[in-house]
Image (cartoon, rainbow, N blue to C red):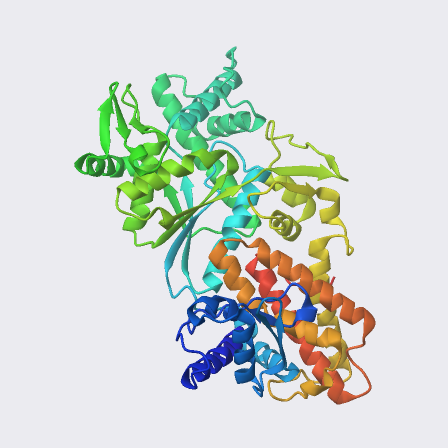
Length: 553
C-alpha cells in the first residue's frame, strides 16, 4: 500500500513540475511515508511539502495545497488533509485495503517474505559458548535472538548462514581437562586438594566417571598428556550436551567452526603476517601489538604476549578475516553485554585490513532475571552456581521460553517469570497469541461442519466487511511484510513479537464482539476469508520466531 501511494504522490509531483506549479524538480525519489500514531490522522502521512520548501522557495502549506490539488480524484485515496506546518495525511479507500486479503490467500506461507536483501550473504554467529559446561539461560536468550535474526533476514531475501564458533583452544580448555583429571584421580581414591580456579560443578565428576568407564584411569600417563586427553574428551562430551539442548530448543547450525582449527591450519600466523606486511602491528616489551588506535580504538591491543602465547584477539582477527574470505558480505556476532568493550578493537581491526567497520554488526545480549511469581528464583542443582537452559525449557516449554526471550530488545534486561510463562490464560502473552490461531482453526472446523468451503482468492465480496474492527484488522495484516523487513534491517526480531501481540489483541477483540459465521452466507464467507488471513499471518510470524502455531489448545 505504501508503494502504491508513493507512486501516486510521485505521479502528482511530476504533474506539478509539468504544469510549472512547482519548479525545483526534486523530491521524486525521496517521498517518505509514515504511519501516524493517531489513527484519526489517517493511514499515512508525508512531510514532502516541508522538504520541498527550501528548493521551491514557498511556504510548506502552499506546496501541500498544490500537491493535494494534483492528487484529487485519485481512486486510492478516500480523504487527503493538510495538517500542522504542511504535513499531508492520507486515508485510503477501504476497497484498496481489501486487496491484501487476496494477496494473503494467494501467497499463504510466502506472505511477508521479500527480496529486499537481494541475496546479500550474511553470517550470523551466535551462542558460541565455551564448551566447558552446559548452556545457561543467558546463552538461551542469545541463542533465540541469533536464530530469530537469521530467520527474519532470510525472510527478507538475504542469504544467511548460522554458525557456532567453538572456543576449543586456550586456558579454559586446559582448566577443563585438569579439572576432569583431578576428579578422575579422586574417583581412583587419591586425596585431591581441588584448585579454586578449577571447574567445581558436579558435572565434572560425571565426566570423569564416564571417561574412567570408557577409557580407563590414566594412571601411567604423563600429566600433560593426561590433561590433553581429558580436555578433548570433555569438549566432545559437552558439545554433545550443547547440541542436544539447542536442537530441543529448535536451533540448528549450518556450521560448527573450531577455534583450534585456525591454529592447526596456520590461519592465525597467516593473518599476523598480513598485519606485519601492512605495517599494522609492532613489537614492544617482547610482545606483538596491533595498531588499533590508528582506527579509533582507545589503545593498541596485544596479539602475542611476552611469554609467546597468543591472545584471544589474535584468533579472533584470523577468524573474522576468514569469514570474509569465505565470501560473506556482512557478519553479525551475538555477544553477551559484558563484551561491549571488545567491539571497538574488532572494528578497528577490520578497518586496518581494508573492510568497512560497518560490515561487522555486534548484538549485545543483556542479562535475564529469572523470577517465580515476581520474585528472584535460583534453581541450578546439577550445574553449579548458574541456571541451565535445559532446566528452564523443561519447566515452561520451548515456545514460551523462546517467546519470552524475544519480548524485549536484546540490549535491555529481561525479567522472565516462570509461573507466568506456564499459565494457560490471556495473562501469558505467548498463550494469548497462539490461542488466537487455535480459535480460528476452531472456526474453520465449525465452518466445515456447516458445509462451508474455504473462500478462494477473487471469490469473496469484501464489501460485506463493513465493521471498523474489520478494516483495522486488514490494515494490521497489510503491515506485516514491512514489519518483517524492518526487523531484518534493524536486527530486531522483537518487532515481530510486538506485531503478534497487537494482531492477536485485535482479533480477540473482534471475535468477542462479533460472530464470524452468521446467517448470511455472503457475509460469512467474507468474515471467514478475513480471519483465515489473520490465521495465515499469525502462523507465518510465529514460525519466523521458531514457535508452533497450534490448531487446538
